[in-house]
Structure formats: structure tokens, C-alpha cells
Length: 230
Image (cartoon, rainbow, N blue to C red; front, side, top):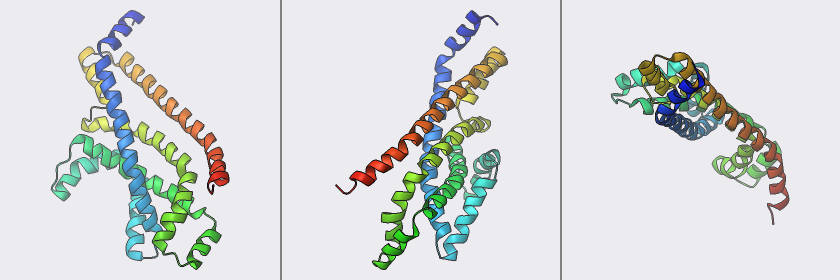
């Protein structure tokens, strides 16, 4: 295929490709926002002393981490309506599945961050009469979050790449739109090659942002320690 023909192919379908990119970005951002909340809740539940909270939380985390994303996606979209009696849209099912898997990994990131906090701070807070809930909310979690940011950002990269699978349930993401273009043009090689290039560029931009943020975090933490009490 000549460059001119390839350019016309992409130019003629730029709006379709652009919409697919927008849907992909939306999926990744919304899923990660939900996953952060679910992951934190699951983490706190797994660290709880109450077995009624700890066991379901640990089961949730292990299920999210140890089940393939494709299986979770199909399960949510086709099995949940039978179980719950509620029909989800393809977009909603995709968000649920992506959030479910990401929250499992994030829960482990949160647990590692919380357990890295100096035990002396926890013992001092307990000596002052702080309840467990207040201790976690005001002392442990705020400090742990700063240490967990690199892991959260890396998980966002993974979640972004995992969005490519949602086209199997007809979510109009970038891969789905590429399939539509191929079905109209019968040119799979240039279309899918261009889509692969787009994913590469987008993930590289996100990865570079993660590296930049990771380098800046030690300086940010040092600044807080120096000026936090002023």
C-alpha cells in the first residue's frame, strides 16, 4: 500500500478512530477511579481483625488478581444479568470488569503501603487513645498513599492496555472501531498496524508520565516534611 492511500484511509476514518481513543481513555480513567476506592476498601477489610470482614475481602482480592480479565468481562456481561436480574450495557460491564481486576492488584499495593508505615507511629497513636478507624484515616492512610502512588500509576498503565479486550462485547473502543474500519475496507494490515502504533504511543506517554511523577515524589515528600508544620 502506498503512503498516499494509507494517509487517505486514516484521514477518512479519523473521526471513528478519534472516538475510539476517547472511549478507551474514558474506560481507563473511570475504571481506575472505581478501582482505587474498591481496592482501599478491600485492603482495609483484609487487614481488619474481624473475620466477617477479613475473609470476604481476601476472597475479593484473590479473585480479582487471579482471574483473567477476559473471563471477568464475559462473566460480568453475561452471567451477572442472570444472577442479579439487571441488564448492564456493554460499557458498564467493561468498567465493572476492569475495576474488579485493578482493585485486586491495588488492594495489595495499599496493603504493602500501609504495612510499611513505622509501627512506632501506630503505637503512639493508640497510646493517645485513637480508635482504629481514626488511626487509619488520619495517620496511616495519608502517609501510605504517597508511597503507593507509583504502584497506582503503574496499574493505570496495565488497566489502559487491558481496555483493548472490551471490544469482544461491542464496547466502541479503539479496537472495536478498528474492526469496523477493517470490515468496510478489507484492509486489516494497515488498520491494525496503525492501531498498534496508537496504543504504543499512548502507553509510552503514560509510562513517561509515571516515571516523571515517580522521580518527583521523593522531592514532594521531603518538601512536606520540611514545611508541613509551618
